Length: 318
Image 1 (cartoon, helix red, strand yellow):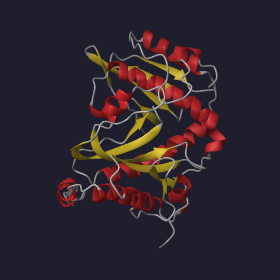
Image 2 (cartoon, rainbow, N blue to C red):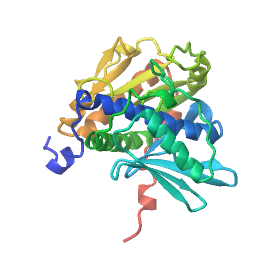
Image 3 (cartoon, rainbow, N blue to C red):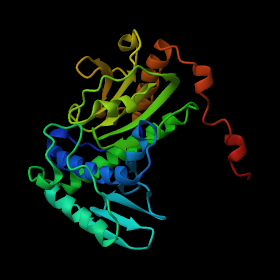
């Protein structure tokens, strides 16, 4: 196998978790605030898909949020380091991304919305974390390393690109590739089409009923989390977990089953340093999905297809 060009390998940036933990934790709370603003106005979609953020060429966005007869959006810009708040009425405001407390970020964001005539009452505290400090009182998290935030966005760009290519192989019910601000992970989930037993819940500061909705159907989920291992980790799990799931062979060799986390993990650095990062990650996504689909007896013939099946027709004639 030939080495990838340096420019391709460099697309996968190195970012040690230990070097940006304080910034990551502050940014986590900021994304919760923005996500909850979307939650305040977007209509319910199965599995809470209406609350997520999406990777963009500059950062993370809510996408359009309905408001009255118009819409607004919020986008974290990790190039110019600002939160853009935009209204379909044509007005916009910006909140600088810089070292500041969660309390200050909350107040500045709410003020920006108010100046655009947008009301967005949100739950006052974060979810899926312990302790859950109310946003208006959180002066503990106040770090922002712009270089680290930019590198994190570049990690998300690569993960999003490969996850979307993997998503294209599935024609059954499948989620978008989206960023869940509760646990701060980028995820994509495939579904077998069958109901799942009620989830037991247990996430900190998050009602069990939230997890019941999120896991109401049998699924195979994968994604990227910036908090595991030396540089973050890719993960994959199934719910409900079929018998033999943890013992199913997966690739690449650096992938392993974590008893502590109840899921397969692949260190980000193993992908970053691989001869072909995209192939290494795709192998992990595919083999962990097969672990769920084969062990869970999914109807794979009905759920999978070749994403290039119409390439010959849709390419312009020369």
